[in-house]
Length: 283
Image 1: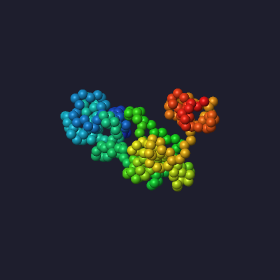
Image 2: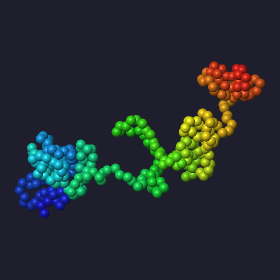
Image 3: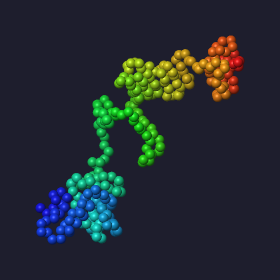
């Protein structure tokens, strides 16, 4: 046998003259077949000018005096002023420069299918996925960031999509695999924040109505105004000697426990604090 069975590299034989020619031919083939990089596999017209070592995969519609004599799929190597054909081998991988992708030779044709993105039935990172949790990640911290490599727009939007209004699209927070809080669209299209003491029964702490933007607190009721609270409301208490600045915003409400005549609610008119009951200035 004068050649290797796969790459057809010539052997050095006993008592062979000019062994350096055989050795150099083997190096020439290795230079093409190992870590193959081609300019293109779509260029049909044989280039009028090329540089030493330029390499192409020939497409079926190739044209040109030398390329037309070569079989489609061949590697066309430019050397010593002209193109010569190199036969690819089964399983050979090539990087296609003008497409920035990898292709593989299956014995008849070149294809990038083996390297193409494809659907995965499940994926586990540091943990085993299951039929219920087909994407499972076990780590102390997960990072989702904007695309600064392609680059993208600088935005970073995470989408959770449900099939219909009556379904659920939410984030669930658990302790020891038992739910304690849930945020999202749970059973309708209003944003809800729900909490639970046992993981089974949930109470709605906040509901933001999709149509009005009104917010309901401490209940799952439909809010009738911008802030609709299903229960008593407590505001901050400030002694007369320690009142906050009324100038920071008209309409603020506080509780003054030591006002003359008794404890009272007070509101800011933008300049001073006034008692809610008679609008008198808090002393």
